[in-house]
Length: 435
Image (tube, rainbow, N blue to C red; front, side):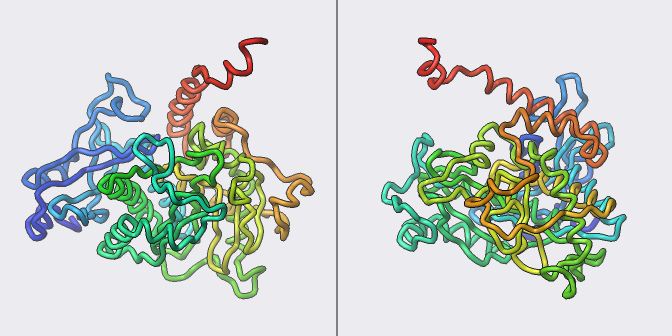
């Protein structure tokens, strides 16, 4: 056993552990376990009823056990007698295939067989809003172009600095925080790492931001498009493949175009070819499609793609090549599942490498101004239903991620769509009562 959680509890004076997992909808589920019981939990797991979460199970399913991964341990910076730990789900002694963290580890194992380690960094955007969600919290944050506004940033110094201090304490390598393009919107950055570590931290980051915001009388939301007139919340993924040791970046090649290797371009080719079939995972909610198919916002640009293209250091494309060491995937939004989204991205990339897929010609144009001139480029789905149908019917996605996971995900998200579709809106009444 690499790390003995019972010993850690004794050494660090931890009283309780949050044994946690994320379901298919990205909801963080936990049990609060006293330190006296953590030894047994580390061995056998904490029991859950899978039907009670967004997992494709029924009340007749046997107990599901969340077995904590001690390498993910995080002591809550604001409550140091409580520790959080991510877990993998098991049932009848076998991994629950249709669960997010297990799905990511499956793709990581496939990458390892091909000689690769996957590393990611995420750019998490969020809004600080009032308690009922009707408006942003700071009523003075009204600039037409509020991005990087120092005054608005410092009015929220209390919240932003507390979160940043926590990341520094946790040794995440926090390096910058800024007011983003929308009024009331923020982004906080920490260093990239192995994809599983980044994903675990992403899960905890969202929990931490919401907790600290609530402490200060605010509400934090990662909703893709909480306000139609403002820029939505993206979650860009910066991705690179390394060798098995994790020491050599396999995307770098000084002789390659823009300094990228053939493997990097094949990875990119897999993304360009298959991304629309996994859009339902990168953009998983009804609201997501109000971000990627949005009209121009008050700041002048949506900063989100609606066409499957790539460019160099150009933020108007779905994939950007900012430096000769990584790809920036700009499609995913704030609602993305921290495990499923990188699993899907890795699946696309590995498919491209296996098949030596050519991503096509780089476009060095402003897609917002001249995108209509591009011929043959695929558009992203217009809504969640279209996206789910693409995922459900994709042979490539099923081969890469497995029928069980895809069937479960599509089934639950389709129920989500049906719930939305059965909702009668005021717009319908305003425009249809007199038809």
